[in-house]
Each structure stands twice: as C-alpha cells, then as structure tokens.
Amino acid sequence: MCRMSWPARRIATLTIGVAVLAGTTAAASVATHRGAAASLSSNRAPAANQAAAPRATATRALRLAGKVIGIDPGHNGGNAANPGIINSLVWNGRAWETCDTSGTATDAGYPEARFTFNVAGYLRADLIKDGAHVVMTRNSNAGVGPCVNRRARIIDNAYANVAVDIHADGGPADGRGFTIIEPLPDGPNDAVIGASDRFAATLRTAFLAGTPMPESDYYGLAGLIKRDDLAGLNLTTVPKVLIECGNMRNATDARLLTSAWFQRSAARAMEAAILKFLRA
Ligand code: ZN
Image (cartoon, rainbow, N blue to C red; front, side, top):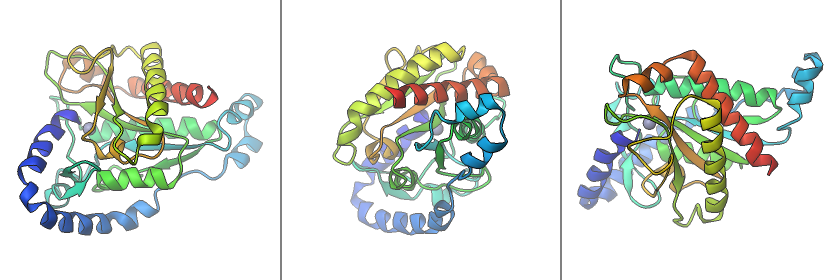
C-alpha cells in the first residue's frame, strides 16, 4: 500500500487550497459507506462452538475469551472501478489523504485487496476459535471502501484490545520482505503509542518465526518503521500496527503472497502475536 500512498500524499499537499471543498466531498463519501460499515462485525457464538467442539478446541477457545480484536484488510476488490469514491479526500488526523487506493498487485495481476482479505479471513477464523470477538472493517472483497478514516473509526468504536491493518507492498522489483508500520503520536493516538510499539515488536518476532518472509531489505529498519501519514494509525485509539506482509512486485515474495499456505501462515503468525501481546 505504501507505494500507492506517496502520490496521494503529494496530491494532498498540493491541493491544500481546495481542502475545504474536498472535505465536503469526503464527508459525503463516508456517509455513503456508513450503512455497509455498520454491519461489519463478526462472531457471537464462541460458547456454542465450544459446546460442540472436541476438548482440545474447547481449551484453546479460552485463550482470547472476552477480548475484542480489530482486523482491517487493506483496500477492497471494487476500489479500482470506483475512482470517484476512492479519490475523494478524507482527513487522516494530520493531512488530507484519499479515501482509499486500489492497492497494488503482483506482476501477474493478483490484487493486494484479495491477499489482504484472504489473510484476514484466516485470522478471523483462528481468533474466533480462540474465543475472541472479531471486528472487521469489511466483510467482502467485492465492495468499495470504506474510507481509511472510517476503517479506523470502526475499530475504535469497538474498543478493540488490539488491531492489525493487513497490507502488502508494491515496492521495487529487487526488494524483498515485510515491514511493520507503527504510529507516531498526534493526539488521538497518544495513549496507544507504547502499546502499539510493543505489539509491533511482538508481531515482528512472530512473523519471522512463523513465515518464510524476511524483514524488508528496502523499506524501514529491521522490519519496522514509524509513519505519521496514515489515517489507520493516526486516528487509532486502540493498540494497532499496519503490516506490509511482503512485496508483491518481487517475484519471490509474490510466489509466497499468492499461496494459500503462506496466507494461512501469515494469519497464524498474527494470531500468535496477538495472543502473546494480550497475555503480557
Ligand atoms: Zn495496501
């Protein structure tokens, strides 16, 4: 997602003179998606599942009982076909940025939105088995948005104990690896900076242990970077990081990112990090 956000940031900077007008458009766009976003929640039936499950599963289900986990699968399958909505500007806490982007894709055309939604689905299923209540920012890959500020609000309003924004990057073809993006303090997120940093470190360790994806060799330092230009991190009031799970424009990373095996592994690594973070 990062490569896609640079031009967006430049546009936001260059068009500051029309920011007020653009803000009006953005507000309408958010309202358009509110109905869809309002229904985006999840499981309510861990108790019923436990009753019918084998003993090992029942024991596992206790691990996240009472916890709320936010998952934001980046982008959406219908974004590219709806530039009028996606290019509207929303306030990200520090500046105007576009409602969303279409996301990146592999050279063969496998879209980032599909990758993020698949991983989110695996992660959601794993967390539900752990007894968690899962809140997703979207529950299909055929829609548009919601806008990035609305995604943040969905998770904030659920009072999630921890949350993850799932993405994959569109970096240089010779660059490999994952990067975890951490928030910088800007007001709304001040209270969750320390916890987000701890979650980032935990997720980094879990991703290295649980997947074959290396730390990025072109972006961030040792798999970590802080940014202040992303609504999902600027506006968060719960501990949250954004993970670029690999580089879709690199052939080796693309082979991993498009495989169901890797997608499940990435979800399990996120689950492991969530478990460790919430037990600490
Ligand atoms: Zn992305």
